[in-house]
Image (tube, rainbow, N blue to C red):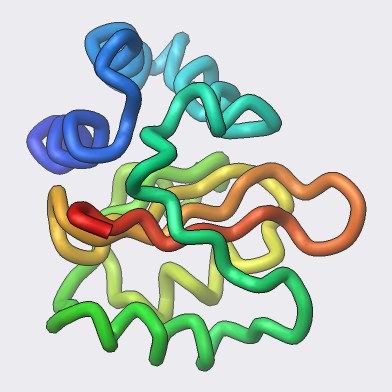
Length: 138
């Protein structure tokens, strides 16, 4: 886990009232899933709405998503916070991160440009899961 990366994500995109609590949960192996659970169905009270750009649910594939994210700026390595333990807390390429989380059905955030641009996919209910670009100054 990279606490610096996680602090950038939380400070940039999470509601101020819960930032310190979320950082505490992310830092604790026993409580990490509590932080991720905040991104399930109640993500609209966890993430700052002014930075959420909703993506269409239908017919959205990984390649289109990667192209869309790259339009916002140069993306080198990404940092992932995910329900998927295999990639949680890891740095990887954008295409690898998307390969793992698109359609996972559980919440994940890919930090593309630290503190500026991220991709968020929430828990899947019926149909496609809610998907958002998190963009500062959106």
